[in-house]
Length: 96
Image (cartoon, rainbow, N blue to C red):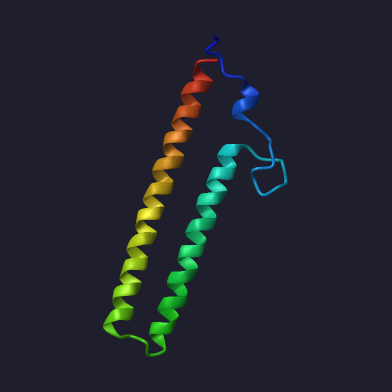
């Protein structure tokens, strides 16, 4: 069994990245994380705007706080995932 990794498997141009077929799976992963973070930021903005209009009950404040913390967790997770995969790709590229 060979330990060589084909360059095409690293730079796979499948239709993972939005169906266009012109991006690597690493770019597709980054794009997916971006979409999740954008959606969470939009939800936080909507909740924050509602609070500006007088919906500032303690339950609303607590919910906004929880949403903000979730955004922080997702942001850290995306950074960790992308950094780890990027480092692994760098290591594989050096070994070729």
